[in-house]
Image (cartoon, rainbow, N blue to C red):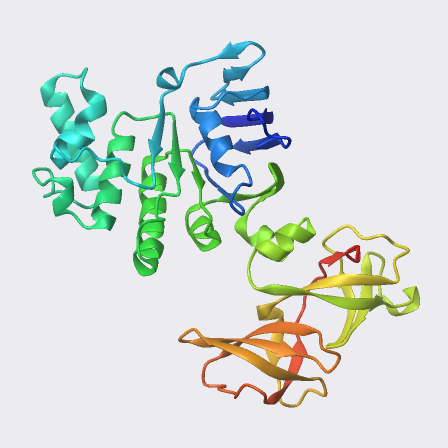
Amino acid sequence: MFLEVDHVSIRYPRSAQAAVDAVSLRLQPGELGALIGPSGSGKTSLLRAVAGLEPAQSGRIRLDGALLEGDGVRVPAEARRIGMVFQDFALFPHLDVAANIGFGLRGMARAQREQIVTQMLALVGLPEAGSKFPHQLSGGQQQRIALARALAPQPRLLLLDEPFSSLDVELRERLAHDVRDILKRTGTTALMVTHDQLEAFAVADVVGVMRHGRLEQWDTPYALYHRPATRFAADFIGHGVLLRGEVQAAADAGVQGEISVQTAAGLLRGLPVESGRDASAAQVDVLLRADDVMHDDASPFKAQVVRKSFRGAEFLYTLALENGQQLLSLVPSHHDHAVGEWIGIRLDVTHLVTFPLAAN
């Protein structure tokens, strides 16, 4: 294991609630992680603790087996060999690009420093930009230079704090994929904080969902989307709703480990359950993602279009069932239905994610 965060807690003065509450996570060498969650969930505080910029009141942080924090040890930030990329790029405006990249290499011989700068410029796809100044670059180019500067000293770990938040949406998505490619080519282990789950999914091998200082789930993007461990993670990730369902008698459920649930949109028969469930519960909330709800004119189950969002290749429909419960559905954009129209729907679910009914 390369990065180990073990039950780390952070408290700020005059705050009743811990900013980070007993969080544990792991990153393998070369693995890319991301932390997402609402504002104030503790993402940045945890990142700062790993960097050595914020003291942890309890817990341990290890990097490549060495203890950085905990048990009376606190390695200063400048001695951790951890690189950081900030949301505002933090480039020096009075230095050209080459000098910005080489800023952390000042102890090296000039020829070696220039060689590394040239390598970094090529790595981020800007080989001719060395003599330019930051104000002469686009936002995306500035972020690439910030990444090159952070990678130049060959840090043991790279931390990225909302690295794309100041860029426009289209550029953010493209740059997120480029950054992942660069980090994978260099074998860099990295941890990123972002509020945008699409960015997290584009960059990271493993993603953590934080809420009120706690880590709700630390898992692959696929597992977070299809097998969320908590109600909050299910609601926070992706497009989906929790639909009330009646658990059928055991005789109707199929083989052991499978249940059947009757919902207002149809019967989900004999499906494996991917989350914990109270075996005695007669009612559950079933997670249905937008891609679980198919448009099917032949279906006896109808829903009314109450909202539609055009997304180019598809519409995201908000649908209301006859009992008032709502669903989301992704439908190819040539199926253009008017708001107020009733359409047939069919559930296409391969496994069940269920939660106990929410307390009123």
